[in-house]
Every structure is written in structure tokens, then in C-alpha cells.
Amino acid sequence: MERMSIIDASYLYMENEFDLYYNAWLGIFEGPAPSGEEFRSHIASKLPKIPRYRQRVRFVPFDLAAPVWVDDQHFQLSYHIRNIALRDPGDQEQLKELFTTLMAQPLDRNKPLWDMWLVDGLEDHRWALISRLHHCMADGVSTTNITTTLLDPEPVATTDEVMDDWKPEPSPTDAELMQAGAVESERNYREQGGRYAAWLGSLKERMNEVDKAFASLNESLADPLSIPSLNGPIGPYRRWTWGKVSLADIASVRASLGGTVNDVLLAIATRAFRDLLISRGEKVTGRTVRCLVPVSVRSTGEKGGNRVSCMCAELPVGIVDPKERLTSVRTQMDGLKASKQALAGDMLASLAGFQLPSLIAMNARLASHMPNPVNTVTTNVPGPQHAVYVLGRKMLDYYPYVSLGSTMRLATSVFSYDGYVRFGVTGDYETTPDIDVFARALAEGASELSLAASAEAGRRSGMESTLQGDVRESSVTS
Image 1 (spheres, rainbow, N blue to C red):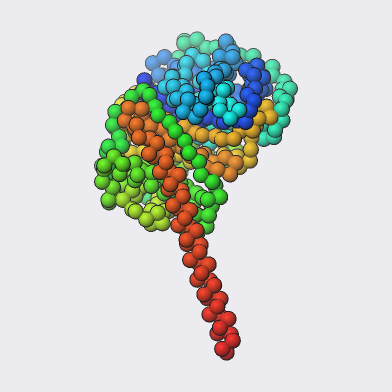
Image 2 (image 1 turned 90 degrees about the horizontal axis):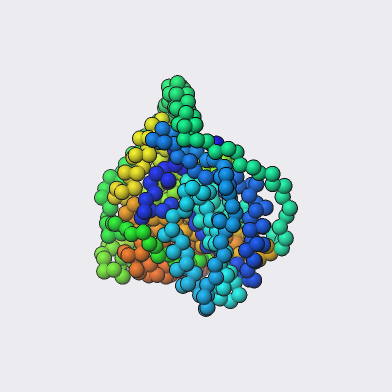
């Protein structure tokens, strides 16, 4: 039995019939598809490295303590790995429809909170793999770590033999959960003073940073949303689409125009929101889209669970010129980093550890029905920059999924893999029928920045040639 962290547990507390919190992805592989038996054997060989895949959640009665992970006494791999085939012609629209159908289905909380769907019948002799993993198990970075464990770095067509002597530990009763929770609460109460003093001590040592961080966060959230139409009630169903951009193009933009990869991606997202809003007949001049940008605070060697903070960026959709948009985003993100805004979120998460679990659970459930203080979220997780395989089949594409939260109607997840940046765009089904406008604009935003970068590189090259010519002429004259 292992106690869940408060941050991990919050994703369970916040979940309701309209908000399902998944870290999910869709992989497209070259064919032919493996049989269900082959694939289950492959995953079975990986299970000793991923103990959470054979554990389920047990809630402590009355929320006296955070939930715990316990071994699933009746674990059956065949329940978590399913086969399904697309009808002819097996095109991308059918695949997206299947994906969004699965995203609207809750995972069974009486079993380990993950599943995988092996999808056969995809056009061009390909097949797909859909993976759902509850957010309480992993954030974006740890989901990537799990994914790379399940897949192979080499095109090996056989599954290694792995010694697996796993036997489930006895499951605790409700009375035992309550007793363990009471004992832990009493111990925490005795130790609380010392832990709180240590926490305050670390806070005082960084007081200037902390003050600046909270001031920055308060400033970001103080003003009302500039574009409230992006928020509102959402339903239980989703739309989802994807796109991809060459990582080399992103690198060329950085080299010519400056900024980080994340800056460039946010500038691309800004163009997409600009096009979306204009297509809806909304004014964009002087307006911004408030975007939550998750930031990993995972320390070296730390694995599993959720270790993430965030910053709030204002995407300048009113700026027409792509270079100016990137410069605006870059300047703003540099300022947010200098203010250490992500530190404020991390400190708030640390402070939650001193509250009663029952109070945290109640507040999280209430928060899931409150208006969202941001318009959207854009996540960016780096993946392997080399091909990965399943039973010798190369993964051609990997598209991520990000859940919507509360009143947020559109969100974007970004994942880099094998030379390309992939976008996964999630929208509320009822209120974002124009999600493809946004997706097309992502590609167009990347193209216009590439053109701007090429023009800037050409301008610099021309200036250098002129300077060299002036130097040569000066040398001849002298």
C-alpha cells in the first residue's frame, strides 16, 4: 500500500461527468499489425518496470487521508488491452472519431487506471495504438517515460523473456485504511510543526524570489479574461485533431529570430487563436488569450506522479506581423521566467501538504465547477528524437491529447518525436465545431515564421556580403 500525493489525488477529486483527466496519445505504426496475443505478451514483459499498471486506487472513507495505491487482486491484462478494427476505408477521420469516443468514456476506478487499444485496418497498410492513462498516475513527462518503457528503441521483432514473479499483496479493508489514515494523520500532526518550520525556513531563504513570483502570478490573474468567449460550460464529448511541423523548421526560426522552442510554439498557437477568433467574427486588436503554460519542476532522477507548476502567458492575438508576435511572446516569457512565476505554483502545491485531506478533496471538487481563470492551456513535452518500435514495427507518428478543465473549451498539447513537432488539439464538441480552423492555422503559423526566418537570414547574409565588399574595397583603396 502506497499513499498518493495530494497533487496526484486532486486529479481524481476534480474529475466529474464532463471533465475526465487523461494523459493520452495516439501512435500510428507501419504494418502489418501484431496480433492481440503478440501485443499482450509484449506489454506483459514490460509490466515489472511499471508497477502502477497492476495497482488500483482505494479511497479512504470520509477522505480522512489521501487515496492509496494497492495491488489489483484480480488483474487481467486482457481487460486493459483491447483489439478493434476500423471499417473500410480506415481513414484518419474514423480514427479521430474512435479516439474521441474513447476519451469520453471514464476509466473504471475499481481497476488500474489505464488501457490501450490496438487499432487495425488503418489505410496504407498501417495500424494505430491508443493509450489512455489517468492523470493521477503521471504528468506529461512521466507519461513519456512510461511510453518509452513500453516501446523499443530498436526494431527488435521478438519480446525478451523477463522474470516476473509478481503476486498481489493483500488488499486492505476499509477499517484498515481508516486506521492507517488516522495513524498517519496523528504522526503528521506531531511532525507538522517541525515540517512547517522547515518549510517556512526555506521560504524565508528565498523570500525575494517568492515575493516576486506571487506578485507576478497575481498580476497575471488579476485582470478579467480578455476573450471570455473561449470559456463557458462544456459537455461530456470532445473533438480532437492533429498536425505536425518539422523540428528543423523550428530550429531555423530560433536561429534567425531568436527565442526558445517553447517561445516559437506559443507564437504559432497565437496565430491559430488569431485566425480562429477572426473566423468567428470577433475583434482581436489589442486583445490577448490567457494561456496556462505547464512547467516541469521534477528533480533529476525523480520518477512517476505529477511534478508540474505553471506560468500564465498572454498570447498577443492582436499583432499581425509574425516576427512581432514571436518577439512579444519571447519578451513576455523571459519576464515570466525572471519573475520565477512557476515558483509560486510550486509553493502553493507544497502548502497544500499542510491542509486536511478532507478539506483538499472538498476544495478540489468545488474548483471543478468554478470558472477557469485562463482561456486555454498549451503543454509542450519533449519526446525521443529517434524512432521507436513495437515488435519491429516503426512508430511513424505520435499525437498527444490534453484534457479540458472546468470551463476551458480548447487546449493544445505538443510532443516532439523523431524530427517533428506534433500538435494534438482538444475541443469541446458542442462549442468548437471549428476546431479544424485552429489546426490549419497552426501549420500556417509555422510556415509564416519559417518564411520570416528565411527572409531574416537572407537579409543578414546580404548585409554581411555588403560589409565584406566594403572591407575589400577599402583595402584596395588604401
